[in-house]
Image (tube, rainbow, N blue to C red; front, side, top):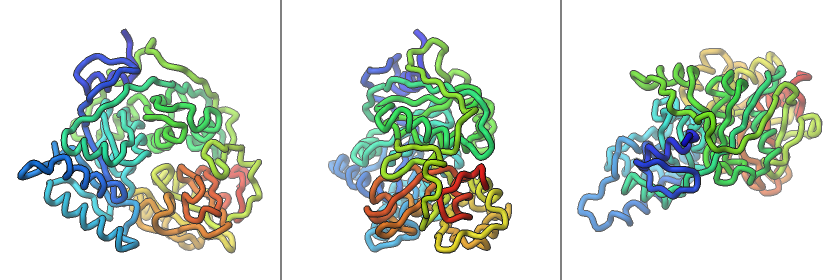
Length: 421
């Protein structure tokens, strides 16, 4: 019987052939926690293993810890969490990227912790980003992560698959962010509930890893358990630079007759899209929101904080300054992406335009650190969520867009179609 890539991954991880709907106890290949969710996982771990004289995690080499949401520490509580996690990583011998590397969902792939066929869990909902490299990666709660720390295993229901077949070529200033917003607007926030969203077709095959990561990152916004793209030569090229001796295994793809629901999209006529307050599936063509005055623009996040995203914005802005009265915050997704942007001259360009450029972190995305919105303020963000209170005041409004739309809007001070820039 032919299988989807998700069924193949769970079959390997559980040691038996499984199908969608089966419940399995699966071995975890990599587990990730960050500074917000990590402390609860650590506390839960010690409760599970408290009877042992010398409690140790199941495999310190398969756990990665990062600080990205509140770095440097912006409160005493954050500082205490950082201290707890540093002590835990030192005690257990766990790799801790601490405060300097960047957002977890960018750092793990670029540091070689993700490979096709892997089963990866992270105590963050956007862990599904790693599916861009052919892994089944999904977010879990801190209590589940505590169990993973102790045993290296976790129970799953093998998800059904919904396969999005994408064809056509993007028009100028239209990209994968516009596509995934369009899909979410189409299927709704529960359209893929507990399903593996599989992105396929010639358009996806033409995407670079950066654009693929944007697609996979937002699978959770339509209820997806994972967002997977079959590995190919683009995947192989990316991973050969990061995993010594990596070779592509064609097994990690869905078989032609595998059981999955299919939806078809042609991007040829796709327009720039925005998600309007206060839900990610409240998606409209940019022209319907054009003219909305802005107080802040956030260019960054695990969705669109890579060099390719910042380059698009820099090219559109050129020598134009940020509009008067608008705060523009630019945050590369990792130290690596920051240095690439710096060497290209874009950091200097953004600063000269009047933007604030911060070191790699989550920034305003979850409203837990810098760049919070006040009452009745309006933000345009390249991140992935726009719920009430997500980036500060519950009375503020957040629109989501591509880097191109964000850049065009930074110049005018209002939501602007990038095709008119």
